[in-house]
Image 1 (cartoon, rainbow over the protein chains, first blue to last red):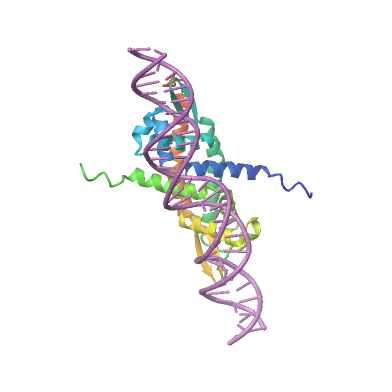
Image 2 (image 1 turned 90 degrees about the horizontal axis):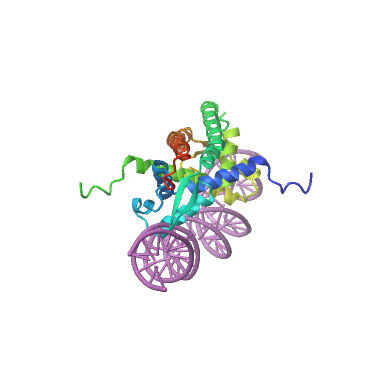
Length: 118
Length: 118
DNA sequence: ATCGTATATCGTCGATTAACGATTAAGGAG
DNA sequence: CTCCTTAATCGTTAATCGACGATATACGAT
């Protein structure tokens, strides 16, 4: 079917989302933020006090996490209340964990029969 | 204990490793490479044929994955045989999955009792 | 209306990333 | 030894990242 190859299939889209979420996870400060949010679910600006980073830097990390869908932010007067997105966490698990499981099985299978050294 | 605060604790080190592995996972091409390696465990240069990327670009992605510990490469004559690292996959699962589980629980708990709107 | 707090955004800087083509290094085949 | 294949590396480019200080915005309190 020529002309239709530009439409990405479902797994490609899922991998793109998986990559985007993994990328957002790929910074120690952002993992620390997610851990903080899990502890209290909404410490708002308290996060800045917990991390050795400037307020603007934390705000940027929060934006990255929000863009990737990891967290949501609700305005609460002059402050913002962030919380983990339940949907994001379960989506991520739903896509990643089967892949990891499959990869691990692949590793175990190829431990003895390596196709490079027959 | 003054003077000892520069030594990172165990969880900090684990988070750093988690972040590094997640970062390496944070590109669609690299996820595609890992999927390919899981399918055959060692396609060597075949990966280039599977992806719409130049050979040098694929080589770079392989280097990123190798540096992060996701894969290992063994020389096999003029070619290189890459395979998933079983240890890396299980390490990643061991650190990430408990965290995800905990985050999901935190989400469920705070769904009704939000600390921002009492 | 003004002040103070909280947070998002802007502008900047150096470092890193992603992509490519070209080149080099290392083996195997003739 | 010479050619060919394979793959890593080099050099370049544009884009993005990570950090910061400074600024702007939004709101509550006085």
